[in-house]
Amino acid sequence: MKPILAGDPTRALYLSPRMVDFCWRIENVLIRKRGFAMVHGEPGNGK
Image (cartoon, rainbow, N blue to C red; front, top):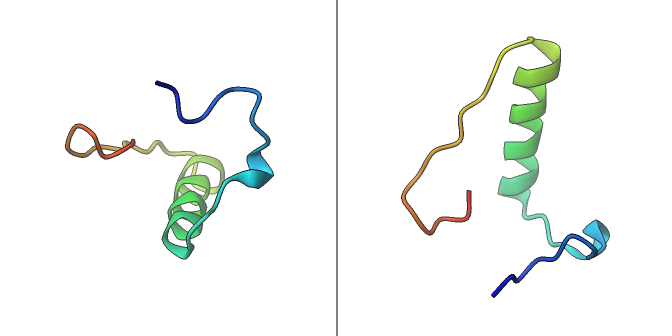
């Protein structure tokens, strides 16, 4: 089962305030500070 398909419009996805903050932090590290980010967690957490 694939709950999100490649053709689904991204504007239909809900971005919680925590997700918006997470995306901003990743963007800040990758673009502004020219670093890298590692996303980790338990299996099944939707990384």
